[in-house]
Image 1: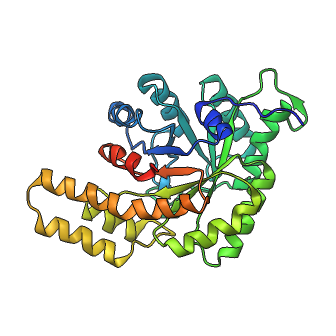
Image 2 (image 1 turned 120 degrees about the vertical axis):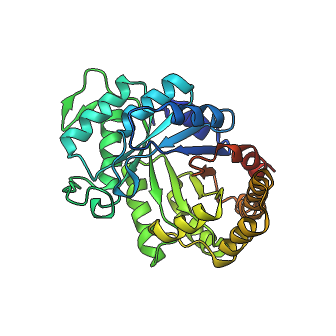
Length: 309
């Protein structure tokens, strides 16, 4: 069997079996990425790499491949390019994968993508020429064989490809089977949707252990009550527990000083996520943590404390 090659810092960390922390960057509806680059610089000392989102919730933003290349060049932070099958057919996606290699991008996360009806261009027609598993297979074909549809690629891409999972799915068994398809297609890592229920998360992670793919657990530290409430209301597949919403609302109501309020939110995130991550690490169910702390880079020193031990 050929030795597995590493093309990125993330690939090297996975190969070593390190406990990994990745972050997330969310480009907005702008051609000026200076704020995104600044967030990436603040995050860079703490994470191996950061996802760059691809029009989440079907809301149009600057192209994620372009944003990934700019962040890597200007912030020096390795990126995980999020690529959805929603917007482009197989021919276009294959061209984008080669474009990623030319731009120095060596990690990609395969996603279905939220339907355009959810976003601000509901008249847009979704493509879905591939699904998230067949996109993984396409990446592996291009990387491992140096071919696309049987035709040679003169300089093949060098990419690590990951996939997504939602431990909150009901029924759980169907989601576990989807992970099996993605693993069979060649997914090298899994990043999960945000979780809050420890018991349900343990059950899900045990159900997909048989696929032997490293799992990075999705966490969403919430920097304010407004963010927590909005996340609960508008993000599909996630329900923020009522006791957390109540605690975050209490911080907003009871603490008027902004600095003290921020410190209280940071500490509340630490107190919630520390026992959850510790328990899952103890059970050897995790390869790392994927933190979706969008526009919240100050939380990363606390997150490093969360995953220690």
